[in-house]
Structure formats: C-alpha cells, structure tokens
Length: 283
Image (cartoon, rainbow, N blue to C red):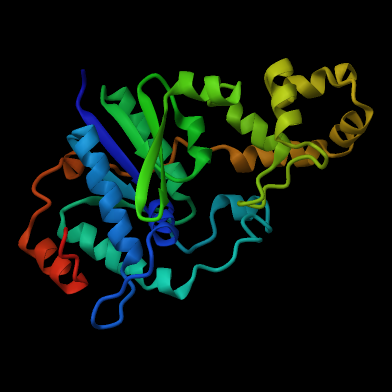
C-alpha cells in the first residue's frame, strides 16, 4: 500500500459547508458557518483516510480557458453571497496557519489542478483521494484515485465514495465517459449547453450504445428516435464544444511540490489563535 495523498476542492467544500451548516458568526460579526463546516468535513475525512499528504486547490477570479472558448460558461451562476465571500480569505488564512498546502492558478479551475495533481500522485505511487461536492470530478476516478462527495444537511455530513467501478455501477458509464454524457446532456450548473432535447436518460442510452460522441456521429443513422437524431444533426458543434468544456485538464503546467504537502502538525499556535478568534470552542 502506497502513501496517501488527500486533495480537497476548496471552494466546492466551502460552498457545501455554507449551505449545509446553520448561520454562525463570531462576536465581531464575521460569518463563520462555512469555515466551521469545512473544518468539520476536513477533520472527519482526515480521521477516515489517515492521509500522509494534503493539498487544497482553490478557484481564482480570472476567466479560465473555458470562458475563452465559450463566453457564457458559468454565465447563469448567481454571484457568491457576501456572507460566504467574506469567509474565503479567512479560510485560506486558517489553512495556512495549520500548515496546509494550497494551490491555485489563473486561467484554470480547481478541478483542473486537482486532476493534474491526482495524475501526478498516482504516477508517483500514492493512493489518491479527492474530496469535492462536484460530480464533474467523477471523471477522475480510477482504481487508484477515489472521489469522495460529502453531503451536509442539518450540520450532519454523509460521504459517497467512488472508484472507477463505482462510477460504472451507478451511472452505467466509465469515468471518462462522464465527459461524453456532459457533451450531450449539458450541465445547467456550469451553463454547458449540450444538445437540445437530450436529457440524462437519453445521453446515457446513447453513450452506452455508441461509447463516445465521435462514434455516435459516425453512426448517426442508427439513432432511431427522429427528434433526437435531428437535434444531434443540427447541434453537432454544440456537442463537441460541450465535450471540451466538460473535460478536466489533467496536464496543467504547475510546479507542485510533494514535500510541501506532507502532513505535519496542524495544531500550531497560529491555528489555535484562529480557533479562539473564530470562537470554535469544540474544535
């Protein structure tokens, strides 16, 4: 068994925690529920995983390569609530105080950074775990990379685990075919257009039958439902654009240093001072 590398999707887990934990604030009026929920999920997973290395990846504000491809990418998302926005820099300060390695890169999403590090870690012989609330990351699952998706409700967190075989069992497609699904059915959360009239059920049937978008278009005459066939014919460009938007880039040019990710002592004086300042008595 190799050493364990734990990778966390920063904004995704912070977002989950914010909506899953009731409103909290400290005496100075700083909202703290997202930070509190994030730390609870972090400690729970650390207990379960017994990880040797940890890294948290964050999104940055700048447009990504996907926005350059498609102006409307994520265009339907509501802006981050101010109560959550004010917690992001504090969360980063807390992680820094705990000695937790953080990575971000302009032009890319946290997904791309996580995918790149996961690939590097697997190649180096690590057992890799990725924690995210975003099912898009299921495309990264392999026999050696596990995706953990926490659900927080009423302050309680349950976690779904997926290796490659689990994705196939639940969704009837392989992790990489998850990209093909998104190409056809789109994704309202990220405003990926997909092909009109093709929902999840139809997209799954098509990918199970044809394997990929490319192969589907090579055998379009075999699609029996006329309205679906016509929509596929008329929206070929949208299907291929959506596939590019849905695919996580696992070859981002980052200078990642495994030695900085090595878990040391989280319980530093700085971290203790932050817990006092945030009034997290139980932590």
